[in-house]
Image (cartoon, rainbow, N blue to C red; front, side, top):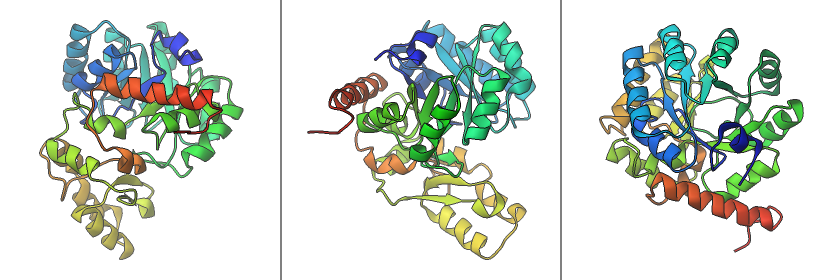
Length: 313
């Protein structure tokens, strides 16, 4: 499946693996890149020394193109930007801020810059600043979210900019992949589908929770204070929602989530930790390798597109 994205990055599949904090490390990213997609290291809020170790391990094990996701609110952002220039991933994706001040530095190092956006206004701004593409992420996705759905956001962004658009949020199989392409996207980014991949390092309890999820099992917390996060329902989300309804301040709520993602991903605490996953989790029902996921999704998408975008058994 050739698109502007595969040609730009010399990858086989126009599929990005999301830069999920505590999840997107060298084992997962390396497996995705080796299989022909774009594996991405998620810097999250980690110190530069941790990110450098992940980059070094990834480059040691594959010559395939890969990416680095930088959370621009990280206290270590300046150091991580310098690491990007040193290790030269094919792509830097960004979130939690604007990469405007770093685009020229990245381009000088031969790195493509692809910000995650949640509105057409931001997409147009990123194009004016020199971004090479944008990731239009709908609110179906896991983790920090915007307001628009993928179905509404992607076609509007595609109409608003001339650079390639990658669709994200609520995509986990070939039907979603084909739908994104029909909306005008040149590729997709997926996160939740990779949580149960054989090469993903999340705790076994986290994987089992995703595999057991139903369509109604995700919930958004934090909307009352402008920090909406989608995760799977558990004791923590219920307590958070209860306190939100009581009008508790952000400062009073924050202790519930501090360290909660690590607790779920690393320690397997799926009761009190934050089990970030998208609304599409209910569709994820099997464990596959990253290569199998990419091959299966692409074959399904191609079949859909051959039949005019309709899913026909």
